[in-house]
Length: 135
Image (cartoon, rainbow, N blue to C red):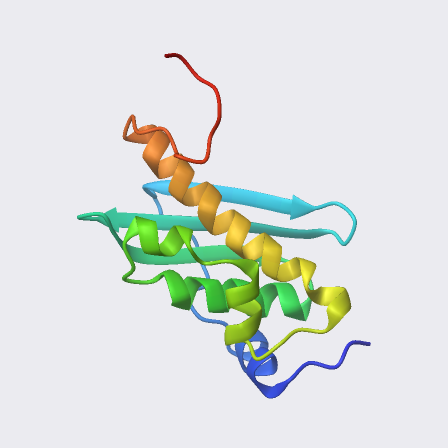
């Protein structure tokens, strides 16, 4: 059983922003088949800022804590700022994760990024990170 610090336990026991946004502007879903964790992030965008973030996570305590932290970190940020939320930043905000749970922080950042990419695609703006496409 991994040992979680107080900050991780706080987000696990009292997760923030849990739920689903109906008619979300962007939705991003990721999963890790190795550990079985699944995360879906929902965002509302207003004037290029994330005005609401919700998520549904099926996974371990670290996955839930990471989702909670990512949602707090993204709230109110511009899309560009939110895209800069990295797994390392998430782990730092949580004051560290056990080594064998670090992959969970990857999932949170990936799900948020996918939700932003989904929003940009719906707006007809291809995500800058995507390669290829028509010229």
